Every structure is written in structure tokens, then in C-alpha cells.
Image (cartoon, rainbow, N blue to C red; front, side, top):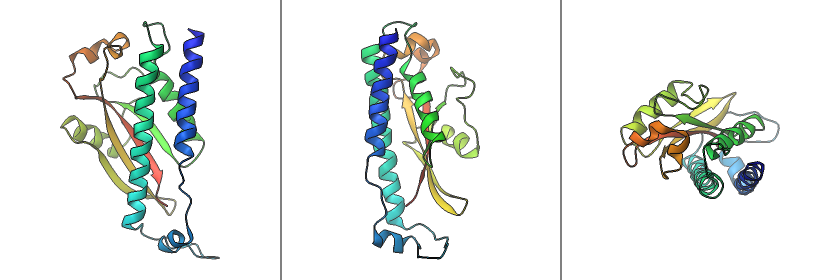
Length: 190
């Protein structure tokens, strides 16, 4: 089991490094576009291009995180005593969220969460769960926090392998493609 935890942690760490190494530095043109100027603190409405860059970042992170969780589950989870990839993802997302402006959370959509903290916390997430359960491919909003624009986005998490049912028996009742959870993102718009 210790070996499984080590490999799962290593894979998730590698995914994090890959995700965070994506170039997202502001260019001079982007700085002008976002209203930045030397010596002034200007709150500007994000441009369509800036929002699109943040959407692309969410898509990239979502792909990396979901592929990593599936890979860890496939290769290292063999019985219910093994450390679940979903649990590793919750810890990874917590560390990411505590270390910078990017916030990521794994949220239950079944009404029977594995951990009580993994539920929708605010109106955005509650509305997102409703929309995803009705078949939406995603949910998003542009928000301002401390004068800075952020993209909030949610993506569905369906059951993709039988191993998920080992620890979550109620997932067996989920219809194909139905979200049993969601990943909630809050990323800066630059």
C-alpha cells in the first residue's frame, strides 16, 4: 500500500508540475489590454481574449487532472484498502488552492459524498451541480475578487471505470455519463 501511495502521489505531483509550467505570463500587449499601467492600480474588465486564455487553462488543467486520476486508479488501486486516486486528488487540490490564486475542488454530485467537505459551498457551485446533472458540459462565470477578475468554471466527473464502485457502491446506480461529481476551478484572468 505504501508503494501505491508513493506512486499515486508522484503521478499527481508530476501532473501539477506540468499544469503549472504552462506559460501564462502577461506580455506587454496583454498588460496594456488588461488595464495595467506603471504606478497605477486600475481595475479593468477582462477582455474576451483574456477570458479565452483562462478557459484554455481550465481545459488543460481539467484534462491533466482527470487523466491522472484515471491512470492512478487503473494502475495503483486494486482493492478497497488502497489509497483512492480521488482522495489523492482532494489533497492535491487542497494544496494547490492554499498555495496561490488557482483554486480547485472536487465536489460530490450524488448527495452522498465520500467526505462531508466535498459538497457545493456556494451558489455558483450549487447551480453548477444542477446544470451538470441536467446534462450541461460545463458551468462558468467571471467574478471579481479584491479588484481582480477570475474565471470560475465547473466540469462534470462521471464514473469511467468499475474500480470507482469499489469505494463508492452508490456509483453503480449512476447512468452512463451521469456526473457523480464535479471539479470546481477558480483561476485568475490575466
